[in-house]
Image (cartoon, rainbow, N blue to C red; front, top):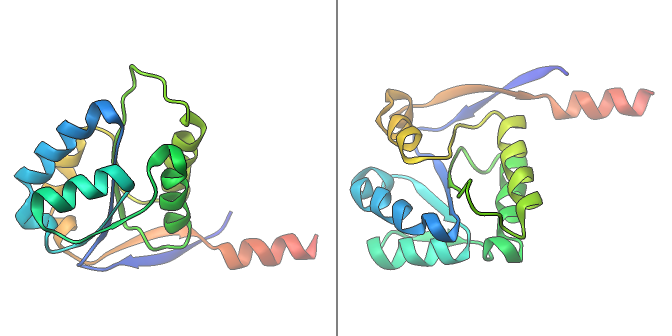
Length: 153
């Protein structure tokens, strides 16, 4: 696979996702970081997005609820280069019926090389990083070259 560069702007497009048992933890993290998060564009799965918007007043572009396809909608935005960073607090001790969607979302975030926090400690590291407040270049798959090579086969 060949790679190209994508520039993540200073104003980030941040997706917030949290399993039911982690929503309160995410809300505490959001409340603690509301001043910084308000400088960015937020996306979230349905219930999480509504909670964040009601609690903070920050506009959140909400998808469907995770089990109803919201995880897949966030994954599609990642593949389209429309999400720069993912905060995904998932519950490793409780199985969810949409677990394949969860794995797919994490796989897409890895494929497209975006920063991902799956716990509060990592989310704290991300938001405290100087990179969080600046323009950043990341390497991503060169999808056009990939398609061209596949067509030549």
